Amino acid sequence: MKVLVIGAGNMGLTYAEGMSKSKLLKKKNIMVLDKSEEKLEELHQISHFDAFSELKDCVPEADIIFIAVKPYHAEGVFKAIKPLVNSQQILVSIMAGVTIASIEDITGLTKIVRAMPNLPAQIGKGLTSYVISQDVSRIEMLTVESLLDTTGKSIQVSNEQFIDASTGISGSGPAYVFYFMQSMMEAAMQMGFSKEDSTILVRQTFTGAVELFNQSNLSPNSWMERVASKGGTTRAALDSMEDNNVNELIKDAAFAAFNRAVELGKEY
Ligand SMILES: NC(=O)c1ccc[n+]([C@@H]2O[C@H](COP(=O)([O-])OP(=O)(O)OC[C@H]3O[C@@H](n4cnc5c(N)ncnc54)[C@H](OP(=O)(O)O)[C@@H]3O)[C@@H](O)[C@H]2O)c1
Image 1: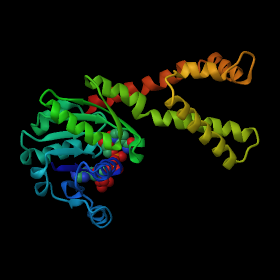
Image 2: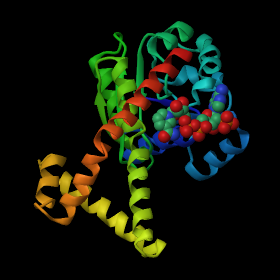
Image 3: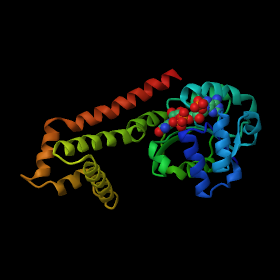
Image 4: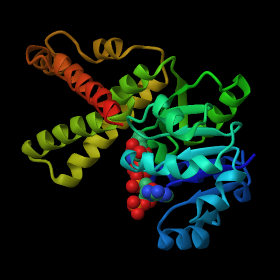
């Protein structure tokens, strides 16, 4: 099996490197294409991927083609690969807002996987949600899933609306966590801690809480109840959040991202 990654940016390289580390594919079977000569030279020197600048030299050879350019470059890439592809090839798009119908329309391909990764994919802790078009067989789906899983975990969703929805949860979600961390660091500094100590306090608190959650079957609500005792400090903080409707505000934020993903989808 040969995989081609078009677009050697943050995400494209994350997948190429994930696949190569996983040993699912030999390095010689991972092809990477970018339009930047400088990047290609670097790729060849450092990562030893087969690096290409011309679509005609790599598209026909690929069994699976990952497209990882920015969404506004998608149409140009689709038009350029159309004369080079064959109906057995699987196209995996990780581009936000680019629909399966638009990919099929322009490329003529019918085996499409639309995936939405998130930033922690870069350290192998990502979450990719994906949906497949009708023509993707079960074996092909499992093959693509194993490639997606080289950057973390994946979940298959039943339709593209859930790709937009997962954008609002896992796609944009890391930023919500950073937002919360930033607020807690600012509170720590206002209490008099140095920036360094504030960072340690917050980092270890998040790491510890996530580990506790990971190592149990308890829901976040159950954990909150375990930490908060009546009349205690944690209860005071949780009551303050409830009084200020923080729960609803966080849900509003997730829906704002979901709605924006839907809007972007109409533009492409
Ligand atoms: N970053 C994330 O966390 C994240 C999460 C979910 C989904 N995504 C999706 O992933 C995709 C890639 O994002 P990214 O952050 O990796 O972008 P990026 O770092 O800008 O990478 C895109 C790469 O593709 C190259 N490129 C542009 N047009 C090309 C063409 N016609 N042929 C070959 N290469 C071309 C770009 O070159 P130039 O720089 O010279 O234009 C750049 O090297 C986006 O569609 C985004 O929606 C990203």
